[in-house]
Length: 77
Image 1 (cartoon, rainbow, N blue to C red):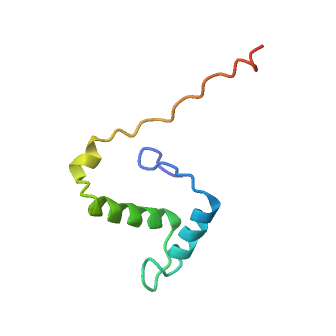
Image 2 (cartoon, rainbow, N blue to C red; image 1 turned 90 degrees about the vertical axis):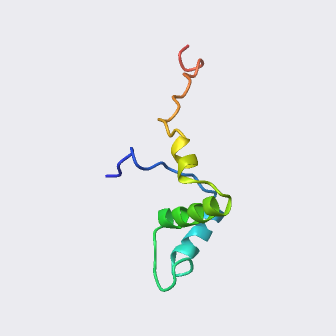
């Protein structure tokens, strides 16, 4: 079971998911298959470095629980 204190879900459009699957199969890491999660990890790490995002910047960002949905007033009638 996934430790939700360490991971978050990300939604991708189907075309981007397909790209991630292609990158996962020996394209992003030479001669190796990796998970789509690792593809996202590698790409975000590269972009963070390219944009000068430091470990301190990352540590400042709060990752909280999901926002609760507002009750639908139509359902309560």
